[in-house]
Every structure is written in structure tokens, then in C-alpha cells.
Image (spheres, rainbow, N blue to C red):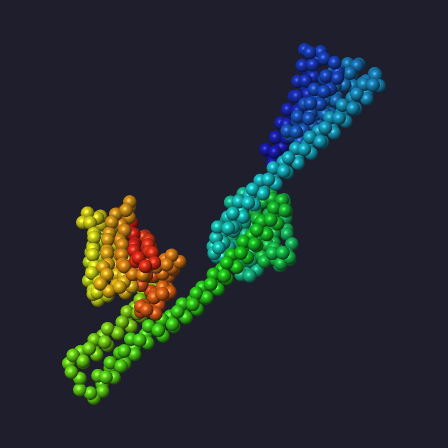
Length: 479
């Protein structure tokens, strides 16, 4: 307060000094006519009005009129005027100075208001950009008071929502400055409260005519229009995040229903054939029929081979674990040949009618990998190549270094994959349109492979042309 008073006194003193300087220069040195003196005073008054405001300009106009009368209008050195025309000149000067000062003050005030509105619009834009960052309703609610403080330079902020009956504060000091009871009352009434003396403002959050909550700001000198805009933007952002969350939950429920349907179809289709074969073989063995040893062994082999149900259940569980991020990798440096050789040995039954050609340079760098998981990726690619390739066609396995990635490829001579399906085949339970009946499968192998490769920080893909085979590849970063 004392600093503001000292500043005003200094400005009055400077205005007086300007008047005395003009009088001294024109009276002692230049000896110009009274008209020139009057225009000089008027110009100085307009300048002071533009810089400091009307009160200093009026003070300077009165002081200049007195000096003009005393030093430049006859009789000199007396506050009297002999010629009536000089009275007209004096009052015209004083009236012109006051009116011009008022106009200058109005222009200055409008310019300041225009700049303030422009700054507030810029702040509103920055605030709206902050509100678009998060679609998570819980993160957004806690972040809105922080966004208000950062965007508008207030000292504290708080928000209350009717739907949750819970306040959200910028910091601990906001609790006492912006009490929850006041926020709840503003939300219920739907009317703003602006305490300009204490620089505290409360504003309802409106969606049309409906109040969804309220905000409170401390250290606030914002206009009512800006406060209403803040409330509207915050309400819209909250409703948008609520809507996005509901849509996400709806989509998740729809996806859950789809997966449930797919799993039911999988169980119905994939489990029925092996169960039928196992049941028929078991009934034959239990029947009182004399079987030769080769026949008996054949039936037991059928039971053993068709017991792949355990693997189907395991793959379904693995898909669920990978999808929820519950898999922990054990990364260690390994040569890619270790994973490839092990995978080829485990896939020998699927590859028994396909010669496998391996081309792996010995100078490839070691790569950090989970050897067991990566071997599983290669097994899925090899088994797919064996299932979808004609008998006696070769399968090629290669590995090479490209830039900072190690790329491993499995090439077959099957029917290929349509361009439309090349992205879809890596989705859970998806199988090629032309292969669903011809070749048994669950559609989980490539989805598992993709999830494992992405957990390693790599990527997986396919290059194919209908009737010319496919190249399935995956890349791993080389550290």
C-alpha cells in the first residue's frame, strides 16, 4: 500500500516538474507567443494522460492553466486577465486539455482491456489444450486445479463435482482458502460469487443450464467472462472424459463377448475331433476284441497324438497372460541359432514332410532375449509353415543383421496370404478365410508370437503373395 502511495506522489511531482520546465524554457530562453506555449502544454498533458491516466493529466492541466495565466497572459505575474479574449483562450485551453485527457485515458483503458482479453483468450486456449491431454477421468479430475493455476497464474484452485460429491484441490493451502462447503453451495445454487477485495472467485461448472459442480480460485483477477469460460471448458472436458470412459467400458464388454463367442466356437470345433478320436480308440481297447500288437499300438498312438487338448488349453491361458501383461521375461545374451535349433527339434513332427534349410551367419551379434519364449515364437512360425505348405516343399530359415536389428525369417511355399489378411492374421483367434476348414488350428499361435516379440521391443510381420508362399519375419533390437 505504501509503495503505491509513493508511486502516485512521484508521478504528481514529475507532472509538476514538466510544467515548470516548459515555463522556464519558454519564459527565460525562447520567448515564444502564448499560442505556442498553450499547444506545448496540451501536448505534454496528452502524453501524461496516455502514460499514467486521467487524474495526473487533470492535475497537470490545472497547474499548466495557472502557469499559463501567470507567466504568459497579460498582465504578467498576476492571476488576473485584462483582455476578455484571453479568458476565452484560457478556458478553451483548460477544456481542451481535460477533454483530450479523457479521450486519451479512454483509449489507454480500452487498449489495456483489449490486451487483457487477448491474454485471457491465450490462457483459455492453453487451458483447453491441457484438458485434451488425458481421457482418464480420474487423472483429469486431479489435474484440472493444477491446469488452472498453471494457465491463469492464480495462487490456488479447487473443484467440486456433484456426481462424486468430492472436492479436488491444487495444494493443502487451498483447503482453508476455498472450503468444501462453499464449493458445494455454489454448485447447488449455480450462481457465481466474486469477492474482488479478497481476490477469491467461485464459479459453477455448467453444461447448458445444468450445474455439474463448481470451481474456486484464489489470487484471482480474471473477468467474469473468463471465469465462465473456464467453468464451461472444465465441464465439457469432464463430460468428454466420462463419455470416453463409458465407451471404453462398452467396447471392452463387447470385445469380451466376442472372445467368449470365439472361445466357445473354438472349444466346440477344436475339442470335438480329438475327443471323438480318443473316445473311439478307448472304446475299441476296452472292448473284448482280440487285437494284434500293431493295431493296439496304433490305437494308443491315436490317443497320444489327439491329446493335444492340453496344448490348446495352454495356448488359451498364454494368450490371456500376454494380453494382460502378466508375463515376465528373463533376458540374457544369446545367439539366435540357439533358439532356432531348439525350435526345429521341437517342430520335427510338423516338419517331417518338409526339408528345412537354415542359413545363419556365424558372426551375428548376441541379442538379449528370453530364450524359451523366443524359441516358442520360432516354433509357431515353423509349425504354421509346415501346416500350410504342400508336402515335400522346403522351408527356409534365415537370420541377418539389418542396421541395428537382427531379423529372423521363416519362408514357406504355401498358398500365401492376401493383402487384406496380412495384418489380421496376427490378431487373436483369426484364421485365414481359405484355410479354416482345410487346416486345423486355433488362431492363437501368431497372436502369441506377436505378443512375445513386442515384449522384446521388436516387431513381427509377413510378406506374401497369393500362390507364391509367405515370408514371416520378426526383428529384435541389437544393444
